[in-house]
Image (cartoon, rainbow, N blue to C red; front, top):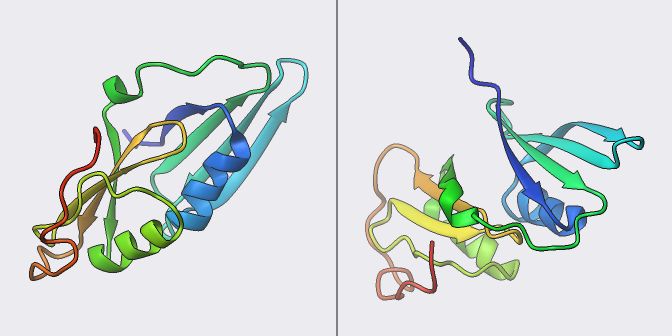
Length: 139
């Protein structure tokens, strides 16, 4: 058995791609538009290519999707948790659970999908401003 992808529904494809590609750093691997059924699928991956995140954009969806917190979260290993959080914060993303321990942080996508960032190779030494930064909202 091989794990292929996780699908999340998004209301604004441009905002989702800005978050996942430009801010988080994933790469679009393929896209499928189905005009008859009025949806677009966009597959994203890390530089290594696996696993993928499938963004499903239903063209006529007007209401907010609910249950984002019930979904759980997507988790990505990063080379430098502090650099990743700095890049996201500078991109306008709220760091909901800062990496106070040098190991783990949480943010959310524009569609409120919880994203966990985990430091590769174990924790970095605690550092400011992260060490004293409080949690914000739900993560």
